[in-house]
Every structure is written in structure tokens, then in C-alpha cells.
Length: 179
Image 1 (cartoon, rainbow, N blue to C red):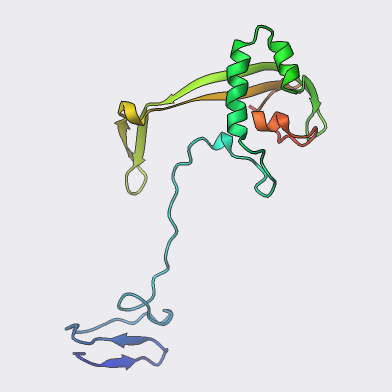
Image 2 (image 1 turned 90 degrees about the vertical axis):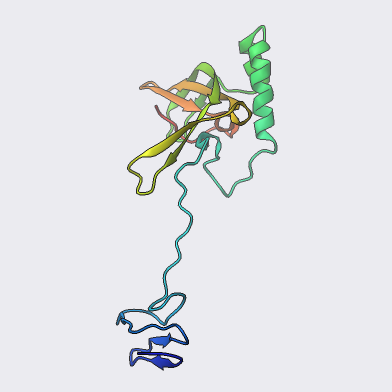
């Protein structure tokens, strides 16, 4: 029985059993010097992020400077585009290209501007182990509403969906998005 004393092991592993009443112990020969806990240091884990909402709004190049208040500019674009009597002229005023070169060199042409109304009305929370989940409808105060804007270009083979930030980049720099 080890009470009120410290002792070390020949592998450099050290225990302190002061007043713990521990009758015995086990030693992991591969363990690093003791940390928190009785026998070995436990590695800390980072926070597990299981959901990242609205990823399509993140910019693909983290090191570059993103236009200030781009979300506000995009919201103003959506509002103006919906009210415009001449959508084609509005796109010209907003400097949205009708034809452009994609980063891969393909010629792309603008087919459609899509504006979706999105409302998040429920929440899911995974259970431990990830095999199932819990669903909760959101109360009115927590419902989020937003508009999603996409520009649909055609490259000769299929559509490419680009965001507002994508089409405002310099020609040839817009990231490829294919659906």
C-alpha cells in the first residue's frame, strides 16, 4: 500500500500517492512523464466542429484582403436587382461580366442570376458517437432569414455557380464552382 509518499519508476514515471488511499497502481511503460491524472498525461483534444453554417460565404483565399462590407454591398445589389426595371442594365452598372475567362481558361457566359430566400427553421444536434441526432424546431426569435445570390455561368460543358465575391474578382481569378 502506498500512502503519504512519492516514488519513481526506473522508466522515469513518477507517482504521488499522498493521502489518496490508493492500494495499487499500474504503469504504462510507454507513458510520458505524469501529468494530470494518475498514470500518464492525457493528450488534450481540440473542439470538434460538426457544423459550419453558410460556408458558401467564406472566401477561398484566406491571405487576400476581402472587400470591406462586401455582405452589405451584396445585400444592396439584391435589393436593387429585384427592383430594377432593366436587369441587364443593372448588371452593367454593377460591373458584372456577361462573358469572362475562368481560371482554367474556359470561356464562360452569364445565363442567370439566382436569388433564393432562405429561412433556417430547425436545428439538429448529433448524439454522442454520431449515429443519431436530435431535431428541434426553432422559436420565432431564433429563425434566421437571408438571401442567397448566385450567378450561373455556362462554360460549354455545364453550369458554373459563382458568388457575388467571385464575379467581382479580377478576370481569370474567380474560383471554379461547378454543379
